[in-house]
Amino acid sequence: MAAPGYSSPAPGYPNPPYPSPPYPTAPSAPPAPLPPSPGFHDYPGGGCSVPPQHHMHPRPQLEPAGGAPYMPVSSGSNPNALEYLSQIDQILIHQKTELLEAVTGFETCNQYELRNIMGQRIFSVQERSTVCARCCCGSLRPLNLHVCDYTGREVIHFVRPLRCSSCCFPCCLQELEVQSPPGQTIGYVAQTWHPFLPKYSLMTESREPVLKVVGPCLMSSCCGDINFQVKPLCESRSVGRISKQWTGLPKEIFTDADNFGIQFPKDLDVKMKAVLLGACFLLDYAFFERSRNRTERSTVIG
Image 1 (cartoon, rainbow, N blue to C red):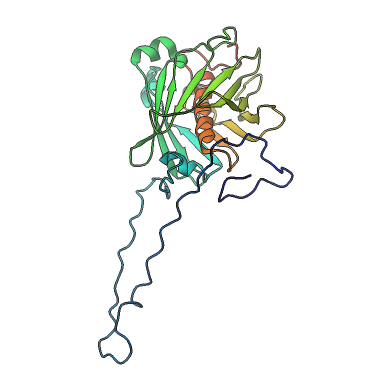
Image 2: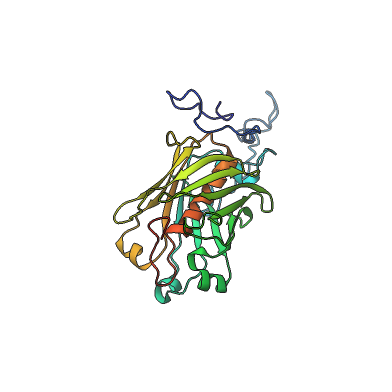
């Protein structure tokens, strides 16, 4: 059954092909009622010589330019950041180009902007890692990603430990922990061993698999997008997609700043949406992040 307040699955799919969460998802808080129309409620009745007193109500404050649209108040069931994710089915991710890194080749901390389909910025993401980790480990470096809203408050936290990149080491593959609010784990992204396909499992906080992300055997970004399909555990069909978008030849050659797009069912559990967002960042570091003179990886082997 679809989450409360949202449309039912598309015709032909009597039930969603992905598992429903074991916990109910509370609906978002209803919007506050509009103030009464000014000038038509606060004056004496008929026969009075006092003219009507038009009471002007203050104009609502607008969000700062480039800020997020309406961010609903938490209903108590989901973390505040996930309330907004429950209303959308697409996210655009733009990595900022670092001038120092493009000119000198010295690896710096990555920065991202998350936007909705209307181009409005909803979240910003800042990497935190040490200089030693960036220089010695390159794209495999352990790091933390801080996801903040337009007020600068951290709402989602990603933790990536140091792991291997090759399928030749099945006991120590890529992993990412997802926290929201920071300090409270809501899920994990873990690479699943496969000899030639990139596969990742999206798991709950108890490490129960819910969805899978499956990529192509050979990832070539020459003048085209690279798509990673989001599938149920049986891998019978696709229910979403993570796309590494083509950004143009100069940007692809001289920088490692990438653009991604994420599509998922609108009625998907909001915690799984946050875990799917973490999977996108893990894919970026695992396959599309250059380190000094090394090129991007094109397979799970190298």
